[in-house]
Image (cartoon, rainbow, N blue to C red; front, side, top):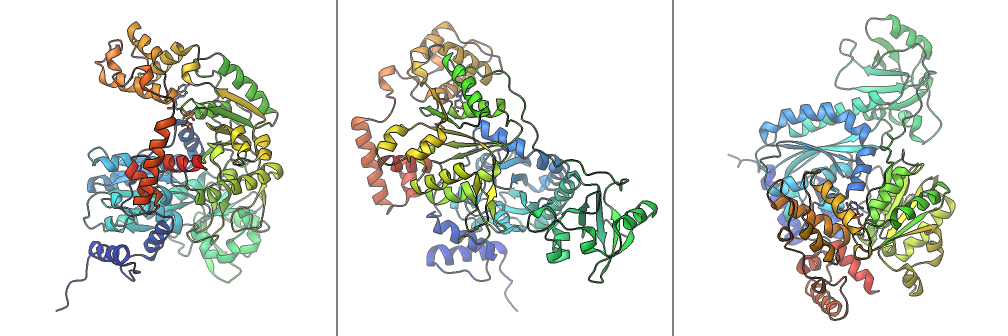
Length: 629
Ligand SMILES: Nc1ncnc2c1ncn2[C@@H]1O[C@H](COP(=O)(O)OP(=O)(O)OP(=O)(O)O)[C@@H](O)[C@H]1O
């Protein structure tokens, strides 16, 4: 008798041994997509034992992500709810990311899950391959198809407890809108998991399709008795028969002919380009008929069309959807220094006059908060705020993140290509945080975009116009960087139309007001500061600035008994002023440099592994290494 076939889990374990221990390609043992992802992770200098950080983006960026993701979140609400009900009993958590891999929505069986799952399943966590390595989410993003990834198939040991299935969600224009995923920590058989996430993704796509502006939506089927069949060929038409969009199934079914419409790949398609007969005659027939009406393609195939939405009497298509307006922000937050709001008001006038704004200030001084305020009060508030932290991603990835790429641009490029941050900021604001850490080669490319307002994705010569307002920030001394040849002077003048300097907390003259305002925020207005505690806080030098202050207040509010004013003892971490130097300097800097050298040597120059040894994040180590040049 033949031995029983190995389970997917057993195959994954053998595949992992073949690749990670012997460097072999594990043919037929795992999905090719997983192997491709492993290869990309290895090429990016990642190691299976590297730590994985499930860090959510900052509040300002999260707000931007949610605002931009609003149409997707609306379309997905119903289907995700149903999916959660179907899979929670089997221990699955449910997640939806946007097209870049940031978690937008989480649900399902989460409360009783172990710690790493609760950390990973939070809004704003970056779940792309660059952040967490191989996973069903990241493979669905890069391959644009549904996929399952079992524990040992994950690249990093730290994510091997996850067993997940994910499917891409495609927008009506064929672009990647997001990914829906279910994950659990039990390796039990997962029959049906892939089918369920795929069906949920299709349902979300249908909702997205319905929400898009169109005068008519046609559902096409080969079966006249079941027009709403699972095939789901959907075509959106304008009032005069112009084809405004198709879902992925229709695009595949209609082949090359379906590549047109609003995809910008050619002239707009018309009803008559695909179907025989007159458009108005078809609409009249649909209005009069009780059921589906036959529709013949030029290829001779006959399908049945029914109205996927109301067939309206020749309505003009509504104007294209704009991103939802960000809530207007009329009052600036408290900064603890009257000079800051004054500078921000002038910066707003600069932005309104198309001048870029540069925010300077130490780490944690509130540059991102200021960028968010500027965007939300600027004339571009209705557009997106797109942020890129130039210090937090490896040099090799910044170019693609910023400019985007087309399919096949490089090994590991995403199928279908990917828009860069500049393109995503079209109509809104681009926030380049830590611009002082941008590599020189990219500074030249960025300068060109700022001068021409045109950009081409990596691997493409086609250029497109982009229209955004620019806000940059850095904690570095750009004058010094220019003097040392690390920052281009011509770029500096392009980004510093108006400069806002956020003083460190120790130099702000209304610090008590900031402390009260922040405490009111973290405690939802339920706490006050005893005078002695305020005195203790005012005496502290706050080397970590507002970030440190927020942490201290949050900690104190959490540990103190509810209701009573906070006392000095509630702030045990506040060291006496002289014990907290503002930055590593002198002997400290030398010791740190030696530790970095040693860690890099021990790990043969592997930055991620060295960062782990040093107990700092990769972003911090990259920042330190760049700072040495
Ligand atoms: N005026 C403020 N009101 C409320 N919170 C603030 C304020 N300024 C800063 N914070 C808080 O302090 C933290 C750090 O702020 P932010 O990220 O804007 O600083 P940053 O200067 O951009 O830091 P980095 O240089 O490290 O990126 C955040 O949690 C932010 O919410």
